Image (cartoon, rainbow, N blue to C red; front, side):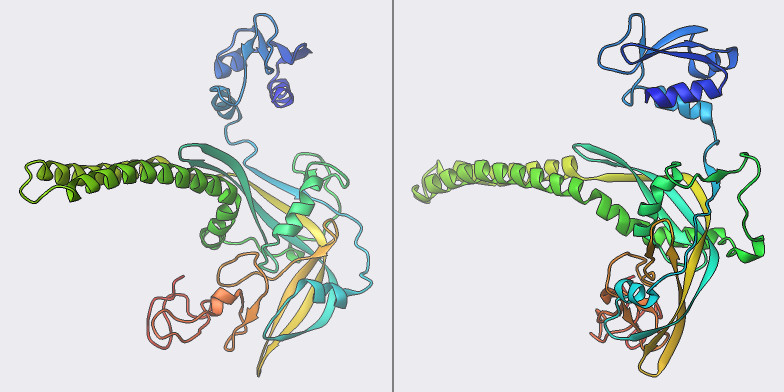
Length: 381
C-alpha cells in the first residue's frame, strides 16, 4: 500500500519522501489536495506504528475510495505486446497427447505454424458477505483466435505482465516491438459475445474461488445447528416425558403440550435466524481489461467421432511453455476430460452429454442449449 500510494501521488505531481516507520511525507499540489482531502503538507502512515502526526491509510478506511476517485477510469483498459523468442517445437505430437484428453474420439495433428494471437483478459473484483466477508480478484481470459479459455496458461503468463522477464510494451511507451499488421491478428470479439462468455464461464470459476470460504461457513453453520438441536431436543424430551407421565385428565398435561409446541416453534425460529445469518450475498464487478498480443505456435488438430470430423485450433504459448486446452463448449469450464458429440463433434465435459431429466436419453447441450431434442424437456443449462 505504501509503494502504491507513493507511486500514485508522484504521478499526480506531489513530492513524496518515505519516512520511518512505514510512512510518507507529502507535498501535494492544489488539485491533489482537493481530490484526497489533504493539506498541502501532510504525513501518511501505513503500519501498525504511525509516524508522529501521521494520518493512517489502510484497506479498512475510506482511502481506497479516495484513490479510486483520483484514478477515475485510468487503468481500466490496457494493451500489452510481448515478443518472446519463438522456437520450433521438438515433439508437438507428445505435447498434444498430454494436453488433449478425449474419452470417446480420436484426434490427429495436421500441422504446427507460427502465428500471432490476442488474449482478452478480464479482471473482476468479488465480495462475498455472510457472517464473515471474503474479497478477491478473479481473472477470466480468452484466446480470441481459438476461443479457448486457457486458465493455466494465463496463470503462468501473469508474472511476465508485471515486467519479469520479457518486458511488455504499453501504449504510450514509444515505439512498439515489431509485430505483424492488424490483419494477422484475430478480430476483436463483439461486446455481446464477450458478455455471453462471462455469463457462462464466470460462475463456475467463482464457485471454485469461494469454495474454501463456503466450506468454512457450512462448518460453522453445522456446529450452530447441532448446538441448537441438542439444546431444544433436551427441552423437548423432558417436556414429553412429563406429559407422558400425566393422565389425560391431569390439568398440567395441556400446559406441557403447549410447552412442547412452543419449544418446536422456537427451534424452527432459531433455525430460520441461522439461515439468515449464514446466507451469502456475492457481488461481482468488472475492474480491468487487458488485451495481450504475442506470437504463438498454432496447432491444427482434426477431431474424429464415428463418421463425423472437425478441425480445431490450439495455441502453444512460449511464455507459459505449454499448450492450451480446448474449451468446453457447454459449460466453458476448465474441467477435463472432454467428450465429443455425435452430430457436430462439440467438445464438452461429461455433464454436457449427460442424460435428459425427462426421458433419460443423453444429448449434447452445446447442440441443444435449451431443450432436449427427443422429449422437449429443459436442458438444465
